[in-house]
Length: 348
Image (cartoon, rainbow, N blue to C red):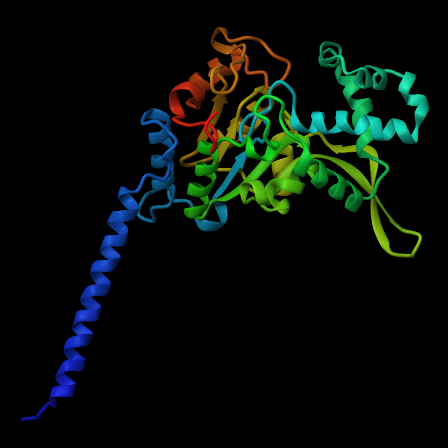
């Protein structure tokens, strides 16, 4: 009979204890993960349950609706879906602040509309500017500079500019429930993209720091650039006054195909400009999730539609027709008032 030393027996016993401890630790980790609420700023209800059920269903290898890792794509509109868009889009505020700089270089513009109206500071008149007026301002303030110059200027503005209502930087006005949703999806190996009607270059300046979404995962309205050389012979790209992609309405699924190359399994928006993206997502095979944020909390944020009798708006319009389509097609409408326990990371 083979004899074992006391040392050998102790080592063997220790090994058994380690294996047992590791097994218990793994089980504890699973139980803890299941019991921890991944969306603490969401109230209990059908909307929150739908999100969790979708994630569990599509990431369970034993489920017939399991989604392989490379296909786990989720797309998010930006303005009004991830952060505040009312009463004016952040990028529009940025270009309005750029008007004095442009007029300084071209003084004759001071007497030309719509620059004259912007310089007047009359908020009511500025709010009535037409889309062609805004396009003129966008071209004057966002083109004719290098890509690097634009990035530097936009970053500088975002670091200093503050929203007038909350007196906080725009990048602090993100919705906490959506930040939790982004993290929850990424924790389950979903790749999150911003698909916005806003300027692609503008959103790319802050997307990674603000949302954890790198610039290459931002699809937005994009202008052309021209390759050239600076006075020192160094290569550069200059922003040109030519629109390549209008990433709004039908432009969103077109942009998704162009830039991502895969149909999303989940899509989130808040306005008529997101309708086609949600339709495109929902039309895919297997489990799909389409959701719209309804701004119905005037106390903590804003209330506008005109869906469900809410005030009408030119910014982030959510029509009754869109609301009816959502109900008919099985999309979920997120009520800020009822579904979100807290809107911002700070108390509003």
